[in-house]
Amino acid sequence: MTFTLITGASMGIGEALARKFASQGCNLILVARSSERLLALAEELRKEMGVEVEVCVQDLSVADSSRHIYLFCHNNNFDVDTLVNCAGLSCAGDFADMPLQKLEEIIMVNVMSTARLTRYFISDMVERKYGTIINVASIGGLQGVPGLGLYSATKSFIMTLTEALYGELKGTGIKVISVCPGFINTGFFKHAGHDAANIRLPIYGADVVVKAVMRGLRKKRIRIFPTLIDNILAFSQRFVTRRLVIRLAGFFAAVKDY
Ligand SMILES: NC(=O)c1ccc[n+]([C@@H]2O[C@H](COP(=O)([O-])OP(=O)(O)OC[C@H]3O[C@@H](n4cnc5c(N)ncnc54)[C@H](OP(=O)(O)O)[C@@H]3O)[C@@H](O)[C@H]2O)c1
Image (cartoon, rainbow, N blue to C red):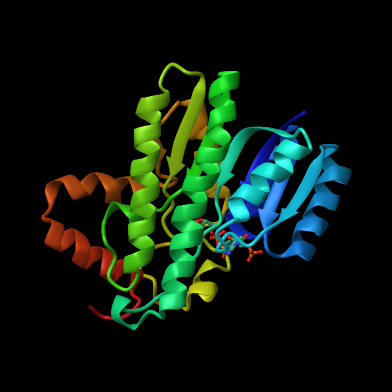
């Protein structure tokens, strides 16, 4: 039996993606730390969509978690044909003030778990000559964002890794895409200590990200920006200095006045 494995499926964008994939008849493996939320979502999707849903509770900031997830799938003969690396977190404020433990947590979840899970599951996909990897990046990954420095760097990592994989996997039957949302209305800002009321761009619902992922897969895109504003911001970078790009990014995110 084949499955779509989604990290960060307990809430926000990951949960929205889980609902969409279930509505398309995909069996799911839901990964995050909040076991009660995952179990409730799994129960609901099994009942309402008639799909198989497995739950794998893991803390992706723990070094061995990706291996445990892979072994959970392998030992149960769950073939993962779609991997969605969605779990992620940020911490608003100056890099100089960030607690080292938070720095490590962000790198472990956003960078290491994305790289490790991709590495684990990609071999099976290559062998089967079939598979899809969806990496949730951010428009913040297009430049360093003052006030969200480490976060924007982790999202750049995701975008460049996705591009390299796209090149390496061309012609193998494996699709790989990064989706790069702007500001999306989830618990993300609260978790990051980022006051969403100050943000100087529109904040959209998670549905725009889901639609973008589906559009991107259909159109075989390497990266996709969900909204018109995201596309304008990304495109306009070509015509202005990096200095201005960075200033504007800090202005829009408005963690504080830089
Ligand atoms: N919201 C935005 O404006 C925005 C914009 C661009 C990109 N993104 C990206 O979209 C993705 C999802 O974010 P969201 O907006 O849906 O935020 P969210 O509502 O805070 O959800 C984050 C998800 O990541 C999971 N997660 C966090 N730390 C984890 C850990 N140590 N181990 C396992 N799972 C962990 C959380 O699950 P548990 O807490 O249950 O573990 C949760 O399911 C992230 O990669 C984020 O960078 C968000």
